[in-house]
Image 1 (cartoon, one colour):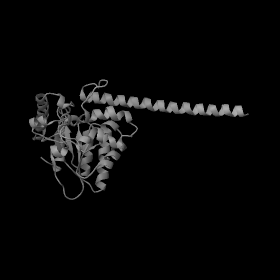
Image 2: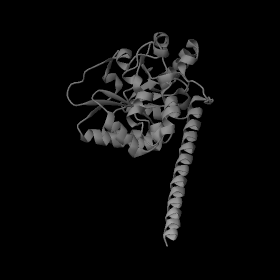
Image 3: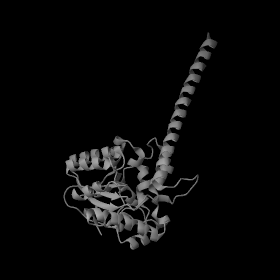
Image 4: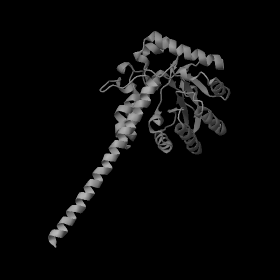
Length: 299
């Protein structure tokens, strides 16, 4: 009898171990697929692959850092560390470090806004033919103005969206012509790309943007001097491009936002559009005031 019980117990233990092993193997496979999906998205945005062991420049390559360092820890363990890895330059980066621009307070001095707590909601990489108009609809319903940093290559065919942004009082900024690391391109090439995008926007709105947000936050003093534009980075990185999960983006932003912050989002995903409007609703209910970045910054 004792031998039978022993064998039965051993069998149960073995089955349990196999079950745990199988679940963990499935989790690892899911994480690997997710990492690969993020890698493909980044490659599409940058036009370049991420070779094995390739160094992409440290903190200033924030979205790429988020892929390489954060995506492999997708269980959520990096929640507070994510901003430090990908978005920390918005508050703590030092000028001259690896060719990075200084913290946003040095790129443009912060203006004190009296009254309610203020926040600037900003969107990169648009316009998108479907999600940007839907986002504009939601912002208009709520009486909220935002800042859109447009990418030149995404404007053709969506001119009416850009015109609508200006007509409805949103601030339009320059996000260069395509999503590349600007400090790796030549100064002349970068200036031409930014000038090209600026002219495209001017033809539609009557004004050239005075603010620029470089892709990945990748910028330096020489580029700033050559373009003559005010650099706008961010304080809170929503990681919407990575999560693609409405509730997770909302919780991250609402947990981290502070008075006078600039929030980074993208208007090219459905989940980002939905999360942005949820964020607006929650912050408005808590007494926050939404402004465009020019209302927060003093050039």
